[in-house]
Amino acid sequence: MVKFAPLSVPWERRMQTFVVLQWVFSFLALAQICTVVFIGLLFTRFWIFSILYATWWYLDRDKPRQGGRRIEASRRWVIWKYMKDYFPVSLVKTVELDPSRNYLAGFHPHGVLAAGAFTNLCTESTGFSSLFPGIRPHLMMLNLWFWAPFFRDYIMSGGLVSADKESAAHILNRKGGGSLLAIIVGGAQEALDARPGAYRLLLRNRKGFVRLALMHGAALVPIFSFGENDLFDQVDNSPGSWLRRTQNRLQKIMRVSLPLFHGRGVFQYSFGLMPYRQPITTVVGAPIEVQKTPRPSQEEVDNLHQRYMKELSNLFEAHKLKYNVPSDQHLEFC
Image (cartoon, helix red, strand yellow):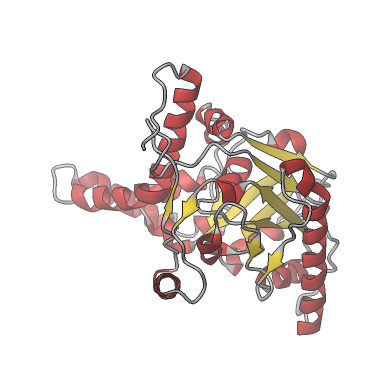
C-alpha cells in the first residue's frame, strides 16, 4: 500500500523536499547532463560558448589539484539551510582546532550519497566556520567528476578537490595553516554496505591517508557521522552474492559504485530515490598529533593507523548512546 504525503504539508517542508530533490538529481545526473549540453552546443549556432568554455577549461585544468575554487557565497546559499533542516543535519565539536595548523580528517561512513559530508563540509548550513573559526574545509572527490564541464566549477565552489597526492600536498602544505582536508576513507566501495543499522567500515587495509598525514605532518582528525547509513534502504547484496560480485566488478572498471538503493518519493513515503528524513549528527573528534616524516616506514604507517582506528572507535563509543545506537553495537573494521 502506497502511503501518500498529506496535502497540508507546510511550505517550509515542501522547500526542504525540493532542495534535497535537486541535490540528489545533481549527484546522480547533473554531470552527465552538463557533458551532453557541452557537446550538443557544438552542433548549434551557440557553438562558440562550448569553444570558449573549452579554452577556459584547458587553462584552468589544474585547479582541482590546487585547492579548487571555493566561493563563500555559494557555500552560504539559503537553499543549503533547507537541506540541513530536511534530515536534519547537525555538526558537533568535541575540541578546538588550532587555526595555525593543517589537518587531515577521515570521514566515516560514506553512506549512499555522502549527505553528511557534503552538508557539513561543503556548505555553511551547519555553521562549520563558526564552530571552527579560521579553518577552511575541503572534501576530496573522485577525479573523474572534474572532467565534467560546468559541473566541475559547481562542485569546486563548495570546496571539493580532486582525490590525488598533488591535491593533498597543495592543501596540507599551505603556509599559515588553517586547512582541513577531509577524505571519505571507505570511498565508493563502502557505499555498497550502507543500509540502516550498518556500522561496517572499510578501513583496516586503507592506509594511504595515514601515510599522507605522516608525509606532511598534518594532524589526523577522526570524524563519525551518526545516521549517515539510515537514509536509504538497499537491495540485499551480501558479500559473495552474484549482485555484490557484479557491483564490485563494475566498481573496479568505472571507479564509482552502483548501490541499488531506494528511499521515499516526493509525494509519497513508500518508494523513490529521496532519502528518508532521518537525523544526521556528525561528530568531529580530537586531532591525533603527527610527526612530519617525509619518507615514513611501513611500521610507522601501521602504528599510526592502529592508533587512528582506536581513536575512531573511542569517538564512536563515547557518543553512540546519544544518537540511539544500541549499547552492544560496535564498529566493525574490514
